Image 1 (cartoon, rainbow, N blue to C red):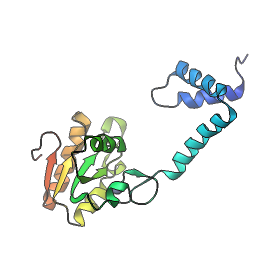
Image 2 (tube, protein in one colour):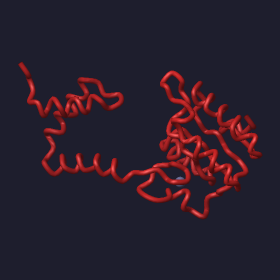
Image 3 (spheres, rainbow, N blue to C red):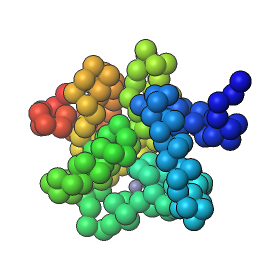
Image 4 (cartoon, rainbow, N blue to C red):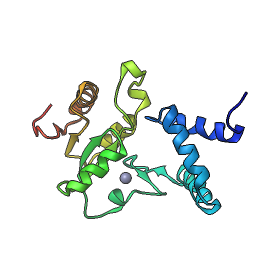
Length: 177
Ligand code: ZN
């Protein structure tokens, strides 16, 4: 015998698919949704659909944007000769909060990870190489995490970019890799 209505079970299953949400948490969230007013529930559903529909990647740096160039690539104040390479958009936000960086970014959307079957072709590496090949770049700063996969990705990219005649450095160490 089914304990909960099918629609509630379905909602619980959707929450359970989210990263870091176990069965108990999924059920708690589903019950919370039931306690919302109709307007609040609609707002929640709309936010999911709208984010999925409107958030795109900047055609230059692949950072998340709501259409067209991201604010950083669109700003004439940012140094276009320096590119900071990060794994995802949250790293851009973190670096922007420090207010110490005035160049531009390139967002890889992940790191090379043989364990998770993520290879160079699954990441925004081709777009980075094309960007560098187009010229006008003096320095690329690798700002991937200092863990095994982050280091391996930085190493892979530096081998790829160094022969193209620009400075490749590692964030926090400030030394050529
Ligand atoms: Zn951009």
